[in-house]
Length: 404
Length: 180
Image 1 (tube, each protein chain N blue to C red):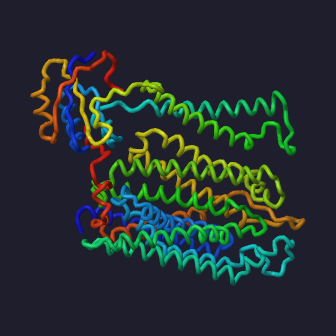
Image 2 (image 1 turned 180 degrees about the horizontal axis):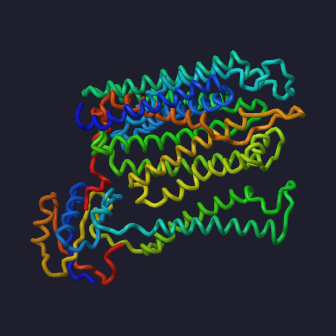
Image 3 (image 1 turned 90 degrees about the vertical axis):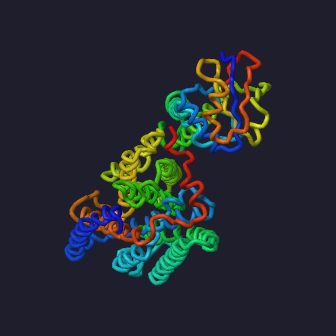
């Protein structure tokens, strides 16, 4: 281990200690306030899973498009992708614990006839089998892709590179369908009578935007203080990631608004229920906060070129986007899961809350994820040194700041 | 303006980039650089100031968005209030798509027409090529040699190490601006 890696390793103890504290409080919460903790667990597990999946999608997208610009820091999204087994396990446990909390008619409730297909689709056994299917498929292909990338480090052959292009294409094609269905099964099904055909792409937008923010943060963290990416992750890479973050912030807003506007315009009772709960009353400011954090601030802050090349500015914007992603998922999950029934038997969403359980889950999962990511990243060489695309253009001094 | 211009020709963009940086570091004024395609980093090597086109784009986009929001509000809520499905007169969500499209349209057109205007590009404009092969496979660095302290030999010393193919002297045929 070189002195550079020491700087990273010393971060381990405090990350691990914070994670233990957070997870400890979560464990207490499971016993004391399970109804309050479960939405937090679902949010956290889904957040971490989509980051890991986003890493795999980033690698697969760049593989199939023959991109070379990202190769120097490709091990960062790969580290995310290699977190998939752990994230899948966490989400599977959370879903298993909360199967009874989904609103499907498991008690023989009467549902209106138009929702007959949904009733069949959300049969608990079928739902659980699909969940296992999605997770196993993603883990298998993400593992194949990252393992070939590691095998490629032995110089001499480009066979792994070519194989990864085919694997990535397969992964992306099936991912597009399975992730749409997964977002419906795990999040939309919390309110089983409500539906939106924009849901899958809305979740893809949030997933990719937050993945880009995490890649930016991690690459910057591993660049500073002579870290493993010092001199490798350049301002040009940061600039390109900044452009992508700007683009996907706009994409998220575009999709968010498409979903909102179509439901607002047609004004059908079975579709508006979702937005009436969220945009009217105490949840309104939270919805506005998610729009401000995910689009308004990143859009205006990322427009100037100097901001996209500044480590400090980009790290702050990435943190804004990650908070925005949490708020976005919070707005989706909490009004559907934290509810109260009034005297007339009508179910109402409780107003937004942020207390010890939310804070503890955030702390525990964020630090545990950072801890696992550091270990995963440092377990392999930080740069795919034998990748045929590495020399040009990812490490070449073109477009660089080294010229006067 | 320049009565003497020295043209250094290169076959590779890396040589051109390094030579441009070296000429600039030596303090010789660069008239322009001619390349068959956009060379990354050339703007920085030449010391060009950041493009102002981004501001044109931003202002045009903002004018499009705000202008369209105001216009739709005026037509739908003030001048001739329309009842569409019982929605309020000033229904902001319904006005956003048109405002967005107008922002994109004006930002795009504004940038393109501002570029054409600044570059004096219009139909029928005669191309004045510094060398015919700059549209194909040659890179030409044009250095202003009218001032003191620079002649052919000086320039040769600066760019010679970067595999320059030729250094020629050219007197502009017209008195107009040589840059574009």
